Length: 335
Image (cartoon, rainbow, N blue to C red; front, side):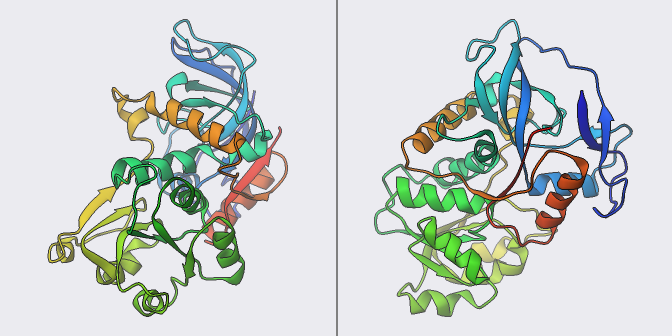
């Protein structure tokens, strides 16, 4: 089967060997595995970070978002059958979705939204899981709760931000403030449902004051947390909450003490990495997201469709993400 991989980490994406096409044998499902024919993928920052920083001794297939069709199931599979259309984000410890066929544990897979094509469905899993876990599991906002409280999303136009903005606006009573630094991304965040949009390239506090907010109750920082950290502490209300997903080189949390600010870190791969007792929660979460999509409550966050799944288009996708100018999700479809 065709697959796209990297063999030498740290190469600039323009280098001809940054990503290469390889042939691999068709894998055999384990007891709880699905063998999925990959129809579409989306590209995430984790793809570029691993390609840049993780050394390998043999080709590594990247990709942590896919939609496709189940071709075979393992002996203990109960949630799916051959022929089912599915979407999922995969696991860090297994070969990724940049291949014609992929194995994935059924407990982290959902049935694809019936109202979406494969590309628009592939845009959703990783970011939907991350956003859902941030809002409802880490920060602990109850569904339809949050009355009288405010949420500031730093980096609201990106993949996770695009889902988080929708979830917060549609499923809670929070006042949602998103940040975006360009007119087109600000318009995107507004259309996704943010009550207010401010510019993270400018000072945050004066902009919050202009919209009548002296402080916010929750900050979810999705990018460049280290650059914004001092301002985040400034704008958070006493006993507020800070959640993040990025990887600052260092993070001095002592300034949080004076305001009794709680810190929450989210990694959507934790359940699959450790095969936690509640690993199936991600299946249930994706089933709920699919239902909300089909009901018209949520929408796909596809930003750009770059064409077929091949080396050239994957290089373009990685370059776009590395530019920090992507809006929504970057998707590719078909081998």
